[in-house]
Length: 580
Image (cartoon, rainbow, N blue to C red; front, top):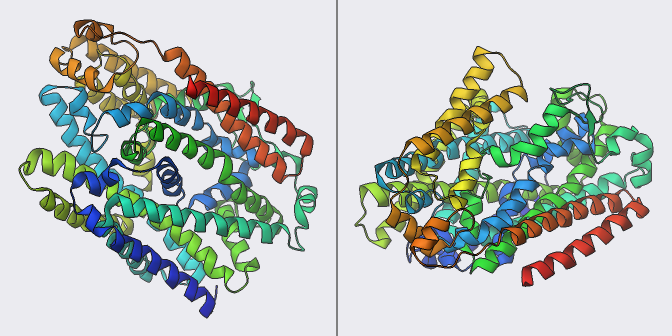
């Protein structure tokens, strides 16, 4: 793809704005770790929520959606749409708890919730595992996606890709290490607007081209199954999900795994059940509990309902425009559409859109990873008496070192792809502990340690000893992990009583905390029915918005009206529930 001076002007202007924001918030970040990693706990909900959406929009996200659409049509997106169930749970069951916990990182919660040496060990282990290893692997994954785009845009030789990606990362390191979280979230806001504007413009240009002929022409040229919103339930095939190029179908076992279990049972980086990672970081950075809840609700609606449709439209158009692409290269249909249809000026805008998506993800990962290393390792175990200025200086150095480690892993990533998938699958079963540690006083540090280790054992048994496949292997891993951590919970002593009292006094969790509340002579409130009502209404709100927007895009007006009415009713009910 050739770029003219207009394209380069757009790219340079974007980079200068990002650098200027970083410099503008540099002094504020120097006030201490709370300002560097949490923006002084003063983020309004619309900034915090948009930052979450921007972070989850990486350079490879539109390509992934294009690939899902190519394989199974619109319904293929249920492979990630099902995560909304857990996301909405975090919105109403956990957002206010994270904000009230008054901690810097989600890993710090370990010692606030548990006591003794097991808690200290778990905190230190998670700081290293998540902050260095897992974080670097995620950044390397995103780096590979950017490298693939640069290779297509500029015909960059493979041996030069790492240098180009390193230059992009260096720009991110400069502004994120200068400004801390406040600069990251402000640039996230701008980057998200740019990224989504570029994607919407591309979708409109491609669908209105002569080869497509508008939405009506697109629908006429596509097989009917590609436009289905819901997968089919295949009771004759209870063990596998369909992955061939046809309508998405789920066997009964896969359906139960995806819809019934995965959202609460599985841990996955940045989106653990109950919140966690950079999602928890944004909740803890909000002005107050209400801002944390609103930020999470905005994130769910924008992430699941608003954002995917421009990508889906281009993905559907790619099926018509490039039908002969090999199955393994279907995701490149998005990039080919960019090359074929974008005029001068807009090429630079789309490249900036992808660069913005990349930078918003990497800046968050770097800041989030550094928060673990500084707050939960350096400050907790190495130099607890250091000054706030020293902690900030160490945070900036750590941000740079994480870039170096991530670039090294990027160079080795081809050999680590299997390991990454292995780590994702080995989170099965941990999620329930991460939920119940808030709602059941008896969960202790050994429970979480066991739930962290047991999935690796369950996965190894199911795949290597018994040669099981998903979803049977998933069911076995979850069952094994759950049985293991429950047994350990009752075989080990509970968290120290005074520690539990302090946690309850500060956080005021719901659920099975009556013995602790009684010992403190504090009233026990049962808000669980109200929380469940908000959760169910939030799901109706978001899914009706998702399908309603889709029906409007496809110009199916009667169905769009039905979903719009459901959305309005859910919005009214949720507003009433939040006020009462």
